[in-house]
Length: 233
Image 1 (cartoon, helix red, strand yellow):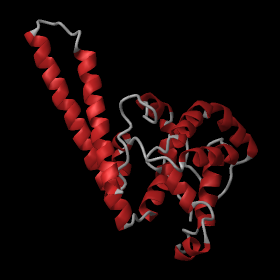
Image 2: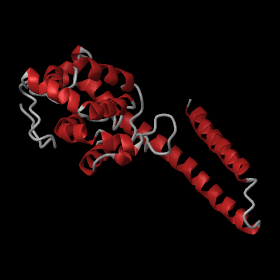
Image 3: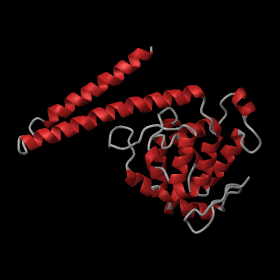
Image 4: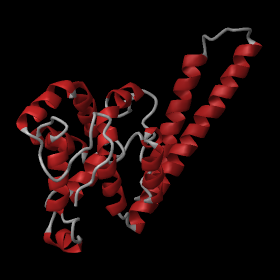
């Protein structure tokens, strides 16, 4: 099963046969910045790719293998990614290390995904974190841009991973609850910002209390989420 799509690098990404070494070495140098950016995103578990790859491209257990189908056994998926990554100038070891670093993290950057990837993620119940805000685990849009040529080449393989993933009812429920908790915390912050803006206008630009107000809201949000979690035990 050969998946090919315009890779934006002057040709199609071949996932059934490795390029000649000369061509591999040329891409190894030319695409190094884009590959490095993509590996960094994979370590964050961008769109849940590291988790999906860890479950679909590697041996998990016999039961999981038995549930897979022709052309979608883990060795089939691994072969396509192994060849495709090589044909983008990459080394398999670097990809595996990035997968292992990101596979246990919650998916991030869903809102920043290309539309067809985002639509399929949401259709599969994969929500995750927005990835915005600059905090730990957040996604810098600049890194997505830097990795764009690699992402564009891998879109068919990425779509296949997402399409093969079926979330259980328990996973969907847990993700939904996390989304509701986050939405509630975001709403608290939004209301605080409105109140702070009103106070600033009333005090004619005096913003000396703004930092304290926002810290207070952050504490309230943390308490809210902590209460939600403790109540589930």
